[in-house]
Structure formats: C-alpha cells, structure tokens
Image (cartoon, rainbow, N blue to C red; front, side):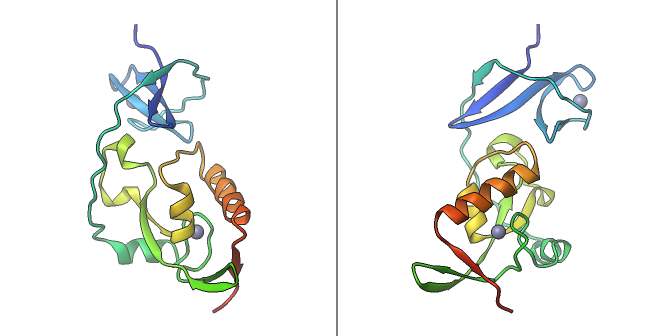
Amino acid sequence: MKKDHLAQYGNVLLKRAWCSKCRVYSFIIDNERTCCCREYNDEIEDIKIMVAPRRKRKRVKNRKEILKKQNNKCYYCHNRLGYYYERNGRVIKSVIHFDHVIPFSFSHNSNEDNFVAACNLCNLYKSNLMFDTLFDAQEYLENAIKNKRIKILKMP
Ligand SMILES: [Zn+2]
Ligand SMILES: [Zn+2]
C-alpha cells in the first residue's frame, strides 16, 4: 500500500503523498499536490528518511523579469531590494539573491519559475527551510531578523 509520509532531508521535513490520479508520489506545498495541484489537507505522522541529493547551482537567466514581477521588492519581506539596514551600528546595503521557492533538493526543478528574488537577510535566514505557506515564511523571517537586532532603514 502506498503510504503518505513526511520526507526527511537533513533537518527538513516535507509532506509527500501518493497521487492515485498521476500515479506518483508528489510533494504537498501550500496544501496542494505539486503533481496536479489537487488539494491535500490530511495530517501525516510517518517519517521517511530520504537521502539528500547534492545541490546544483544553476544560473538564473530571467533575473530582470523576476525583479519586474516582484516590483523590485524582496519576495519575503517586501522591502525594496537594495535597501539599507543597520547592524551593530553599521549601515549596510542589502544585496539581491535569487532563491528557489521550493528548495532544489525537493523539487529537482531548476526551471526559472522556481526562482524568486530575495534580499540577503531573508535568503540567509531562510536557507533550506520549507514552510507550508508564504505567510509562515514571512513570519519566521521577520522574527529571525528582529532577533538578530537588525534594523531595516527606510531610505530611498
Ligand atoms: Zn496528481
Ligand atoms: Zn527580504
């Protein structure tokens, strides 16, 4: 019998469920199957340890399009990319990172659609964590940045 489970990659857990329609195991992101977008709301308790595949770097070709789509704002904190922040009394300019929304190790997908532009702080603190929803990620990052005593400066 095909059993739904939490797939463990290192310290990250991701819901994985059998789809009888597509006849594949697919990941559940934002309560939807990644194979066919059918809704999935069940609780899963079983954990299956997976071998983490090696992460490959791929160049992001459509950087400009991604930035335009996001209005030049960070996907997570919505601050204008290139904003300044203060840390230990020093003012630092943030830099842009192109981040996989679904970490590459889960999706095996390096298609451009999978990339978003994020500021270096959100990119750093999110690292390879998975969140059920974008809201969860934003909440986590806001707290992480606050806990590091980083002050986002409102500058042009
Ligand atoms: Zn499916
Ligand atoms: Zn950010």
